[in-house]
Every structure is written in C-alpha cells, then in structure tokens.
Length: 157
Image (cartoon, rainbow, N blue to C red; front, side):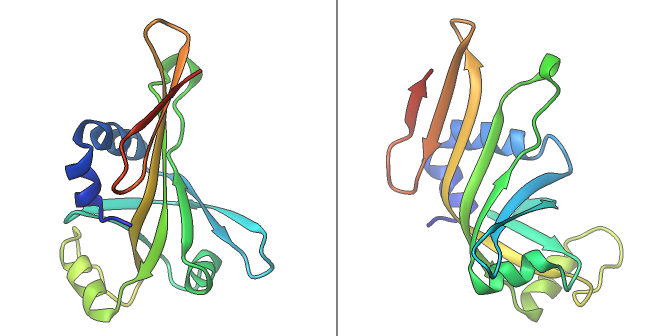
C-alpha cells in the first residue's frame, strides 16, 4: 500500500495522468462491498491533498458502513463524452477512517466554515492505479497499471 505522495514519487508522469482523469469531473463512482458480500456502487467525490487521497461525505451513508466492515474500495473517474474522451483512470485501495482530530484538521483546510462533525472522512491507502487511453498509432488502446514497489505495466490492445 502507498500514500498518494508515494504513488506520485514512484511514477510521476503516470500519477499526473491518473490525477488529471480523477479530478476532471467533480463526481466519480466508488465500489464497496456490502454486508452480504455483493458490490455496492455509489457516487462520490474525492480530495487529493497533503499527499493523500481522501473520501469525505455525509455521515450515515451506507458506503461508510461498508468501508468500516471491509476497507477495500475502488474509485473510478467519470469518462468524458465519446467525442472528447482523453482517457480513463481508477484506483483501488484500503480505506482508513480518520478520527475526530484528523477530521478537524481536514475541515480547517476547506473553504468556508465546515464543522468536523458534519462528515465522515477516510484516507485511501493505494494498492493499485490503472489508466486507459488511446495512443499512437491511432486505435491502439493502452492500459497501464501500477502497484506499489512494482514497475509500471503496459498492455497494448
């Protein structure tokens, strides 16, 4: 597992692409594991700050209960329209819930007057990142995957 800063340090160019795709749109999707073992897909927002990838949202959401029970999570960027598609990215990892002091520190860095009690907060320890794009020659789909401590893998399709 790695922090976002470690991911950026290990494969900076790839991390820049992944960051760009994950932050290109406000809303993303995330997958968690429900109590019955099935998948749950939820809309989410992320914050990349202080060398960490954060998930924050209203308290009481079922997705947070999922993460407390089983911390495995996948986050997928929203694809662009077909005509403007620049690629796609997703990250997988383990969610670590942040305590009250950590929420207060996080809230202090947000614009406006955000109470640390108004949201749940999780830091993501990254276990993998994958990006897909069309490359030259045109029509070649390039899939790149990174896992901590391993070389960046590339598969052309």
